[in-house]
Image (cartoon, rainbow, N blue to C red; front, top):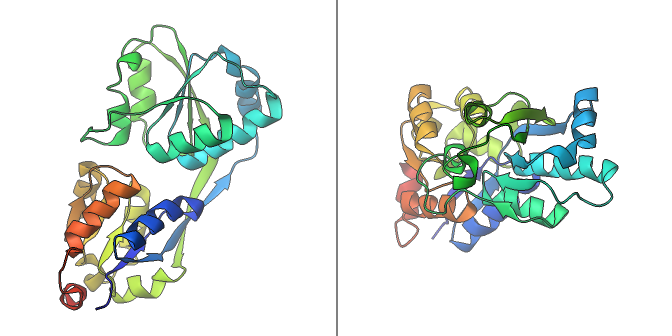
Length: 262
């Protein structure tokens, strides 16, 4: 019996844990390359943030690639990491990169949080009152402003560092043809930017296949873009996304031929 084909859109190394989880669950995981991540050249503002790193009370990191760029920057200026800052990550993948590259303890959103990871992180008690505390927010160019805005409203002095850019590209890799033909059982997307970009490349058949997203916010966006069958996972971790794929594709015993026709 053919395995359900699942297209995954996480760029670069970020896709590997999800790929392994899907394969272990009985799916055929296929990479769909649609976005390139590129580190930005160091500006005077970024250099100053590195030099002042020990003056920040809290460091909030929004993605695994942002964590990699942070670690690379600190390595140039701090042979020994200062003890002052507390580290926060919006997801487990980001926290793992911080732990692996910097050896730091990382605060995460509650494991049972139902809302988007950025909003969930803001529920942590240690981020409720930030009167005059210096907070470094490490991210890419553009993106949502909910973290920066909320932290500032709570009294923090926020410095936002954009360390990389996300560049949408024409879908490529093994999954590009499957996307064009709608020949897949599920598409996994955890970024609003990617969701919007891919909508322009999806045929009607592709838009009618199950779409796995990581938050209700993305599901609402998906509906407005024309995706007809969004499924909301309980977060953006490989385990949560794989569980949603298993549910959408009936991996516990469905007729996968029929699923692929649907």
